[in-house]
Image (cartoon, rainbow, N blue to C red; front, side, top):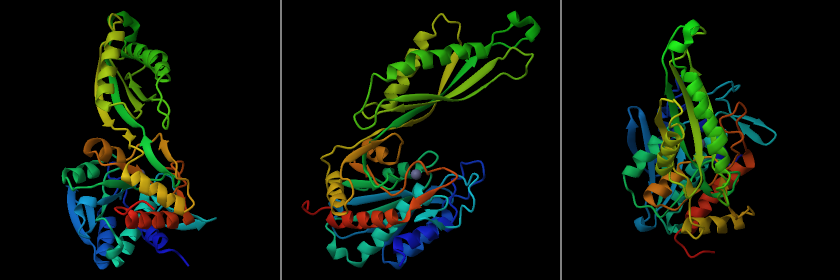
Length: 384
Ligand SMILES: [Zn+2]
């Protein structure tokens, strides 16, 4: 018989919730939020909408048991990336114990398993020693503005589990990022009299060489035991207009991944200063445009939520060693900005997220659902 968490996942896959930021004209999270709202209301849960953008609301689902100072938060985003070249993205398809569909692993499996956990706990609230909150958020795939809006509510929370694909590992650390663009400014001229111009692409070559030959090798000297070293990738380059014109502008976009212990604001400042100093006297006229700063996750091992998660993983025959991953999640904002000890936990692998073949192991969906239920039932009680 199919586990109810898997049935919920099937329903979630059928409802498109592509982030409208993606150029395919994504429909957003409204439809899926209506489905979740109706489901949770039927289970007697309290559901509140929080508008983040017009037609795009976070859902805050609460099971209050009279322990607001021991509240546990589940959080999972409702949006997905675009369908891309995925075949039948909205049709839940089973193949060799895997369930395929857009969002199957990122992160509808977690969302479905968390909804299941809320429903199960609502049947017997007397078994809980904590209040339970599920935030089904919007916009994680673009700029995590749903979670930022939720945090503005300042709801007291003692521990949080963010639902993202971790292959059922307890993630306590992950990288953050500093994304920025560099623009070089030259002077256009007819290419037959190139000396009248100033080539913005040649200027950019100096910037890129400095990033790849000086900055990148130095990153290897820093390392975090669970996340490894910071990294940097120049991801895009655009420059020049026409083959016979000296280019007057060139731009690159850079994705710099930072490790726990590093602060994105400080790293951005340091990058500005270093590039500024290195390009002095090099004839490079450039500006830096900050695009996105994101925090790394660094949750203390002795946090209540980590310890309870370890105990439940032990009971479910899963590895109970806290781990680190290179990709980011909403957990880092909860932990760094609100000091809420947070872990990331969920079925599936990041290798399948955002890809043409997105799937999740069916048995892990069920196991994750059991994990969330058990965690909710143990949180606030003495450790088993
Ligand atoms: Zn995700």
